[in-house]
Image (cartoon, rainbow, N blue to C red):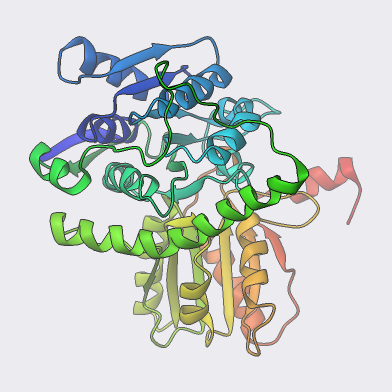
Amino acid sequence: MKVMIRGNESIAYAFKLAKVKVIPAYPITPSTLVPEKISEFIANGEMDAQFVPVESEHSAISAAIGASSKGVRVGTATASQGLALMHEVLFIASGMRLPIVMGIGNRALSAPINIWCDHQDMMAQRDTGWMQFYAESNQEGLDLGLMAFKIAEDERILLPAMIGIDAFVLTHTVEPVEMPEQKDVDDFLGEFVPHYVTLDPKKPATLGSFGFPQHYMEFKFGQWVAMEHAKKVIDEVFEKFANKFDRKYSKVSAEFMEDANIAIVTMGSMSGTAREFVKKMREKGKKIGLVKLTVFRPFPKEELLSILKDVPVVAVMERNISFGFGGAVYAEMGANFVNESKSPKILDFIVGLGGRDITFKTFEAVLETAERSLKGEKVDEVNWVDVNKEAVLKVEGSL
């Protein structure tokens, strides 16, 4: 059945359909509606779960770890500074191999204070051992939320997962979403069955205990192996989901790439605008294609190599910046091709930070630079689009 819901509600409905048993959360814009909706479900008797109000995001993820260690399905939600406050505990959730799923209302980090969209919050956590998925639409928020539990709880993985939904562009925007039947979700997902020791007063155990140097690296290697296994498991779960619900997902999707000499790479909600822009450019005879990343961790190296190996110029558009280098996706993309005999020219475009609109004008500026590179002109590898550079450089000094 089709329903009109906001992006935050798509995460809440995913938790409800997945029959999550414990939801610890602390409110923070723009993800507050997730715990609000969950508490409404519970109060109305629509959801058999325990909502745990806590005093901070640090406490929220700590409580999630406690609940997951008991052997129940756990979900939570946060954004921006809240996710940053969780940072030290995110490593613990991953190191203890707990399949927690967290919805993130992707929002800029302070300072200055900003409540609008970019991906800096999740990108700053990319090395914590959590899988990362990015939704283009509210439908993808719901679907990825369901699939994340299936993937995270797989015995070959047992790692937590984040679902990114862009602040306000998705979190607060109403879109039509196909809501699956509960019985179909039950059949697809099943009940969570813990694979290892769980906390039980009758059978005392220590989880996440002290790791001496002679053991610690083996634990970390185990996490690395699990993240590598996740590549295959994600494909399997995406295929099962498509067979069950007739909605197809892939770690990387490619459109108009058959003869493309320029590929635009996107993540999240900007992908919809990019698709329409590429269609318009195709009508004008431009050989431009679109590559959308749905999964960032584990990084889909093999798929990107296959899709982009024969493309002369790749334009990576991203809502994050690693100061002193460039964007995180750009860095990963460059590393992807470093040992290949044939590599495209990879350009980085920093766009949409702090909620700045990404429009056709933005894509036109990206395409213009990419076309100059295609002609052999020297262009900057890292490009800031739609920025008042003159005003900044008057203060900071010229480059």
